Image 1: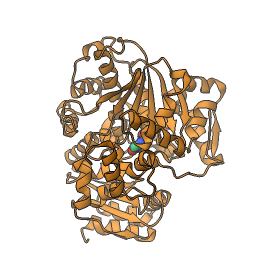
Image 2: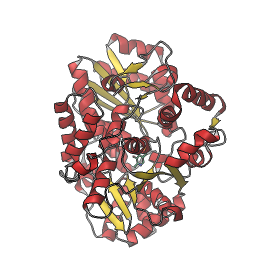
Image 3: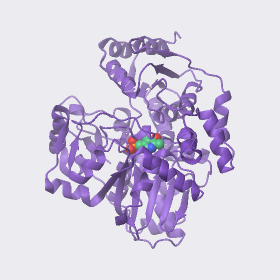
Image 4: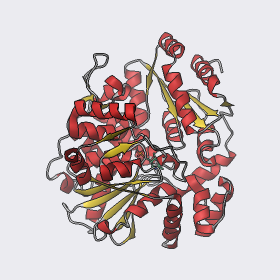
Length: 493
Ligand SMILES: *Cc1c(COP(=O)(O)O)cnc(C)c1O
């Protein structure tokens, strides 16, 4: 598979690269990103041949079909990391919620959110490539709560990679913060900053633009890569589980091979949804990909009207913080795939200059044919969590947004799959409020209250966090970040 630049070439980057090159250096000309030039559907009998395959076998077959420049033994080793998930033989269990409504649980990895699906294999591959090429990389991330823990967990102790992770102190759940600050390893640095996620992100941008910082990295021979979903190395592991859940439905006799299903995806940066888009391109029978949002409903407007408009919006803090995003980076890859680089560059330029763009009716048509969308307020999401619990199912607030979309009349009678992106334990205070009416409890109290109501134990992986020693106590002002990270890189802290 060849990757090209979503906004065309300005002479400063390679116009087309291999998968491994896109993974090591994801940023392309004019602020664009690398994206597949084209994607060929799998053979007509692919699904039939893999009805009884393990997650790993089926995934390996898909990755080999894509012809990426990673050797098969390394791919196997990367996919084998899913054996560390709760059920080694079924890392992504599908659960029947009710007739024609299923939940694919993407959160059974070490940090209890769907980020592990991609970051677990991605971490091994990036580190192995870096070692083979004898290069040192720094991954800088600003996290609103799920990417940070998953990135730290996957890179812990890995050769040739260092990770510096910025999080907003007070802006994540207690569990998410503990997952980060208790990750002890020489190649990891976690820094709390005073402020919110936007402040963490803008601090990161300032750092990336700092001439002295980049000069120091060059002197130390350290390259920057990225672990967010602009990196296609993450997307590629997010276009496999849709096949897995589809095949489970065939095995169970819920659908026949070839029947179409509706996928519901709690969306933020559009990486999960993009994986579904490519799975459809590979030939998986998908009737619609439904984009669920919270009150930050810019994607709902985009899909309903073809207008992507940031100009009259401020970010709203919701109970589903991983979806508190206005500029969804991966939408750009859909634009590129449908309309090509020239038009993508034009649209992204308009978004930067004016804060909005409007697709033509002819451009809007294919978007509407593939996607549908709706958004769910915090109030509504409490309702869906409560309703789900009454039916014996615990869900997190991100997943709850999909219970709004899958109840829409247009999807009644179809087979619906909700992609669940986090375990309830990461957002226990919201669940506690939904099912017990408790408000503003801390995570510890809320975990215990929910576990008592559900008559289950708090999973050990979460429970143990509260007793682990804190390895990264630092919370700093924005202007101290550069020095902190340089100290970390030179080993003087
Ligand atoms: C990251 C995340 C999302 C959003 O996924 P995108 O790929 O950014 O759209 C949704 N829910 C949870 C719990 C997440 O961690």
